[in-house]
Image (tube, rainbow, N blue to C red):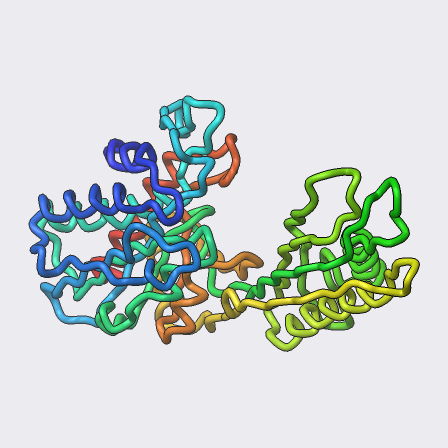
Length: 384
């Protein structure tokens, strides 16, 4: 199997919100293979995104040549910024970026290439297939935006849905955690840090007390309370411009994850309570204290598909047919499948051989990528 396609796609820049170039590449290949322009469409998901964007989701709806339930194959187009400038190069059984300053972009250009290669093989060989929807979402890396805001009516009511992303090709991910995002604004009182520090209320002190409390009480990092499990993280802290001013404003971004929505809500409540309490405790010489505002944005909900469902059984059968041992897994990270399942399209996620994603050590296993293409072709042609 030629690797030219996936290497060409990894070389094209396309961080979240800047997917037009890779979308145009895919569309050109589709048209050359004989897909009519009327079957190719973009939705307006980018217009609903918190970051805007150049273009919406790419959706291709094709009639079948044999009867059967419509099948959907999907993989996101965008990459993380670290992949811009990647120069894919083969080294034995792996592909890496020749530029040591960039990630490869196998996440998820390898998945996007699996979908495109599958269709090109079907078209070239004239293989019979059931009705197909090919779906390349945008902005997965910034919160599953494309899958969240997809125009579901354009997908054609698929009954069996498969997503290709990171990991080994023999592992079917049948569930994933949910995630809530927190924007925390800590407001103190500014004063001269040398002349009158006692007049100020430090936003840094408020935040540090809150974070320390969360750590001590087990609400930060891995969160285990009885039978309930989740995670939380204070990921971004921004504020201050000078050392001679008591810090009066601090912007914090945090997250809370759990497979149990109710327990995730308790984590969010614990974070909110800790910051609000800390704001009341830190006072200046005049008895004034700061304040905190917390804005919670739901990113995606958890899901789990029963392993007896047809979509899971089809995925496992296709994996086994290639000689691999099929395994299932529940993910603690978010996937486009989270939102697809929420839209009423239970989706199994399969890997394409990527490892070290989001780092300059990222690589793509050629044997695993080729096996992913075999599995996708079996599923697209309705063999399993």
